[in-house]
Amino acid sequence: MHEFAVGDIVEIETMNGLIYAQITHDHPSYPPVVVVFDGAFDRRPDHTQSITGRPPRFTALISLASALSRLGKQVTLLANEQVSDPFPIFRTPVRDKLGEIIYWWLWDGRSLAVDTGTSGPNRDAPLREVMGAAEFWRRLEDQPDQDG
Image (spheres, rainbow, N blue to C red):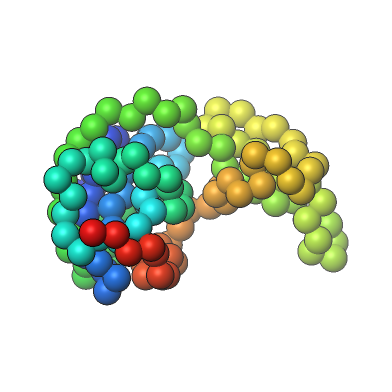
């Protein structure tokens, strides 16, 4: 299975139904950014806007085709749509000697910034780490909202 391109929307069959993800950005030092959209479907929606108009369920840095191939999972390339969103913000915790988080590094794909707060718009930003295949599948199989 070849890796997907930026803009590709893929359909992944899970025990909860069909779940959709889109490869949104490339970075030379990391795997692609993959956004998994909220909701699971009993059947494929008629329009991709029904998928891409949904909020993200989670975002990950992962080589999607390789990860799903390692798990023996089949995916369907549904469409390719241009992505206009900026590179997402990722966060990395910085811990003290006791393991407590003392601040966060925020990364926008180009530079780092420090965030000392525990609230605000970046509180729920995805972690800046390469997600493994098993963790990706576990998060897919967590109960999403059921749709058509």
